[in-house]
Image 1 (cartoon, helix red, strand yellow):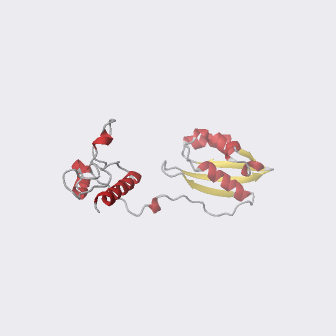
Image 2: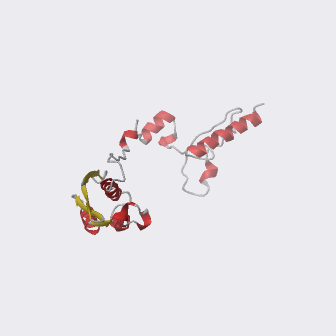
Image 3: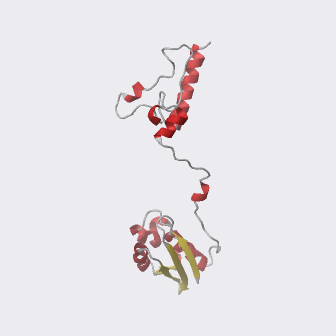
Length: 181
């Protein structure tokens, strides 16, 4: 018998899955406080031996999981336990850990953004883009008032976001090359 502990993550439920070979298949028992997993477990108490070879669209473990959240790890954990019980997988921990990948996080208010970037009222992308004309009202890349003054960034033409900010830098560089000989 294989026992797997599946920490489902954000929902906070820990699920204990016990899989035991039974004839040519598997008997699955799930201990959980999640009502959806309890209902789901009733539908997969007995699984055929070939369940570990079936692809997602035709695998009964996934077909019966339609009541669960799309990324619930329990169905995958059940299949992994079946594989291990059948001797088809190493009895190793499978882990998806997203939190450890965040090295630094900082939350900025509009006031913080205004202070750190001098962006009016802390607006990251400049003036509002809520109408069709807004894109044409953005700061142009070449100053009309001061010769030799150029602008680029998220609040300058063509707009915000990393790809457009990079494009803004490219446009500005081309303008400098064109006008500053």
